[in-house]
Length: 212
Image (tube, rainbow, N blue to C red; front, side):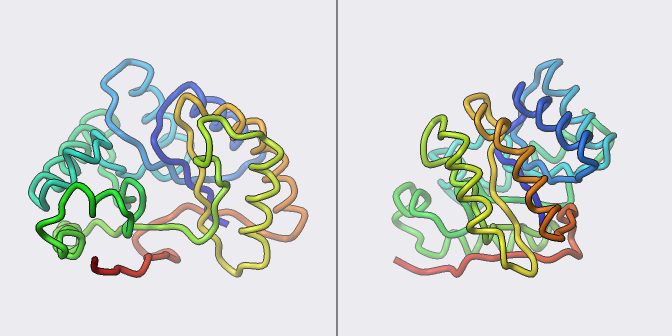
């Protein structure tokens, strides 16, 4: 099981890190760029506590990053440099905002149907592998989804898989993700699963790319 958290850090990140420490479970955090003292503390905690610090673009601004491959990579490299300056660690893994095959970039960039292919090639040249997911907590289905629904859906979509990359979010509104996490971990452990971080050499999921 690969627990992954997108869009942080926020105060929920600190709570999640506490839970992960309690259960001795590693995770991967795909973060955005927040130049605050608290955010820098969270970036450093992620690294120091043995989790994976991943790149999720600096701005997470769909209208900005999906204008062109150049705009996208400028935002990615901005976060790479920012996190390295903050923690001494340069991220080795990446996740696309909304995933690698989404409808958002199609609405932003209608003139170039191959933009995502070009972006993926640019990431490859930077030796920055990307990771989608094959199980979801569905915590993005609402601003703050009921914790019982998050628990139920996570176990439904993750259980039975030999390897599962599970999508969670740790942005400020995701308090119920924090609430559901202990029981998710306990249940998966009871079913014999172990946990790991994503790395350039680990199991990965790539969504199929479809043209317009």
